[in-house]
Image 1 (cartoon, rainbow over the protein chains, first blue to last red):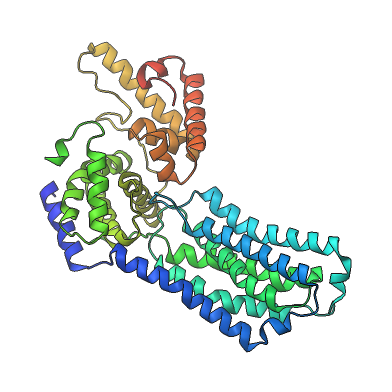
Image 2: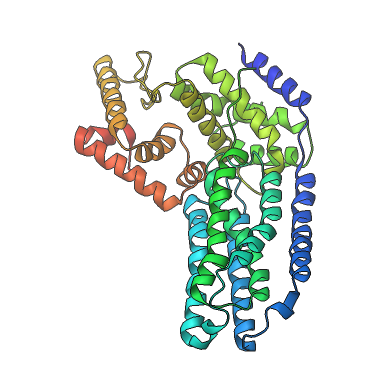
Length: 220
Length: 201
């Protein structure tokens, strides 16, 4: 095949398969943010809202909510941002986001519990199934939406990107759960608040490798 | 003609064409094709040694770029992105075909790392060809990560920063890997390596 033939084939194939432009993609990406907030807020208020989270000192309520919010924001920036690069973040940054997010959050909650051991005496019998379910429920929509918006975009490390997105969505949903849940006992925190982030990172990695990657197709 | 651009002149033009294409200017795709196709073909042909497969992979690379144009960031460099896509498709095609690694195979028609030596005497040219072949053999024995970094810089002429984007690792990691490959070659093949390849990255 000559170079000219190949060029004609490529241009013809591209002409026959219209693709979205940057403007379309940007609108879709921005729609994910308010939609995710609406979904999480609906769950939050449907289950009792701030009232449900009472019973803890105000300093703890504010510090833990702000701490989760800061970690979630950093994690989201690490997973979603890319600067002026077409190949996204490096693998080491994405892996650091996926592993570091739950680790940092647990360390923060451990530090709070150490600072005020009485905090761990509120409902220590609760295992955390509701919190786990609520985190997964609130994170599923943004995770699936972001994977859909970014489908076929990562030629290098789609699984790592998916894992980072999963951890970021889990941490963001966890802000709402942290404001809602009155329990600070460490086993509860580990199972109900941290485990879903790890789970979402694993699900993100599995889905990311299938959805985000660029795969070879059959001969045309 | 864009394909006639020398040195690094074509890169800003390619970046601008891809940027326009990502924004919806369909006419920019043909311009982008003219600028990238020779580089992509050389990149893939060096690894497949098969013109048919190379054509197929070039076509698929451009189609993936077309389908993913919305993801191309403003101000990004298109070449590392295109090479990263081509590399991914090549790896997939090798895996799908059930073939073992067939990159950088020895080739009687000339080695990829061999520099033009038109002014060399026949003995010298033969020695260089043999050395290049030994380098290829030694590269085959190296860890894949070291070989890839070395090959993108020495074989494909990418800068450290561009190779880092293709492999999605830091420039420091690329330098380290390429340097280790170079050091291993020099340890096994002696100082002649320096004559053929120049300075270590």
